[in-house]
Each structure stands twice: as C-alpha cells, then as structure tokens.
Image (tube, rainbow, N blue to C red; front, side, top):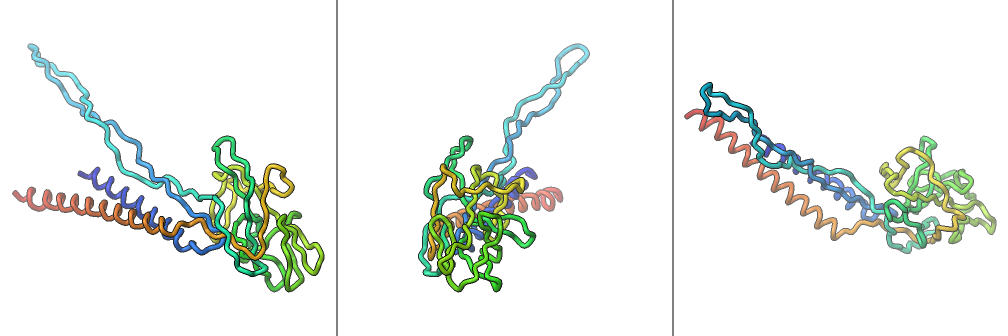
Length: 277
C-alpha cells in the first residue's frame, strides 16, 4: 500500500512541474522571439519482484531449502526527465518601429547526429560582461545610444556593443547598421549546430552548456538568413494547445490526488478500526 502512495505522489509532482512549464509558456505567449518549452515525462525503471521462501522436503530429518518465486515487474511512477525548447522559426509581426529587428532563418544545416536543424541567435552582453544569446529583436537605444535587447547590449561582428549616435537608423538584410548615411556596425548573428548544448537562463537568454562562445554565422556559405527591420519574431507558443495541455495536466494531477486520498482512507481504517477489533 505504501508503494501506491509513492507512485501517486510521483505522478502529482510530475504533473505539477509540467503545469509550471505550461504556465510559463502561456505567460510568454506575446514575448518576442520566445521559444516554448516541452516536457519529456518518463516512467521510473521497472523492478522485478521475487518472493523468498523456504520449501520443506518430506525427509526423515525434515530438511528445507530456500526458494525464490518470481512475482512480476512493478513500476514506481513517472517523472519529468527534462525540459526542451522548440527552436522552430516564429512568425513575423510588423510593428512599424525602426528599432525592431526580426531574425529570419532561410537555410540552416541539419545536425549530422540528431538530424535536427541548428539555430541562429543575436549575440548580447549581460550585466556581468558575458556573452548570451537571444531571439528577442525588440531592440531599444539606451541613454548612451547603445543598441540593447532587454537591457543587454547587442554585439557587432567585432564583439563590441553597437553605438548609434542618431535618432534613427536602418538595418540591411545582412545586418549592417546605417545611420545618417554612414556604416556604423554589423549586427552579429551566432550559430549553434546542436541545440542540445543550449541552456535557457530566463528573460529570453540562452547560454551554451560549457559556456563556450558560439561561432558567427556571418559569411558562412552554409547558412542563409536575413534581418527584417520594423518586424518582430513572435513566440512559438501555441496558445490553444497550451490551454488543452494545461487542462490535461490538471486532470491527471487531480486523478493522482484522488488515488492518494483513497490510500489515506484505507490506512486510516486499518489503523483505527481493524486494529481496534
């Protein structure tokens, strides 16, 4: 009976974590460039149960020997193995703001090991001076004229923040920033061939698993992309499906809760009624 308690509790914990993930997706449905998460729910490894017993042999001395009788396999519940982001291309939304820039993927090579496409990102610098990567093209100019994404300076192909001392600027499809008719810098775009190496940090930022810097995709003959000024890339969250998945997770949590309550009532009867008799 106690094993059933653990199994039901494991199911509740798995669905709780899945609900938290789906809630975060829903909260970021309108966040530019947000990549939705997906949960992989797995079962714990099965265990083979055996019963150890003694078997008596009808001899003069009444001897006995040990014997193992197979009972069968048992599963101890489920758990959320990992959360994975979907790096598919989001839709484009025209905003009319010259500071908005969408990164549009055209030709991205497949990873030879996973047969999954790589991903492109804007390179930014966080408050600690470390490189991070984002698809959020909702750029702004700070008080010093630095082009930023979510408060983080956007990096150029030279590895430096982009400084624009002009009220307006233009961005060409290959990322060149033109202000007052003069070239300022080129927005750097980085490429990750294996998306499994990316770790989500929050606020739309990613880093590599080993904190190594991603290679640039600029002038890479195997990669084609373009930047669209006055546009934003929308999130990859499917609102309708997310609502449905949230209801499914809630019902599954509720079912495991009912099982847990049934076990609790059975244990209460065993301890307070059967034991009293």
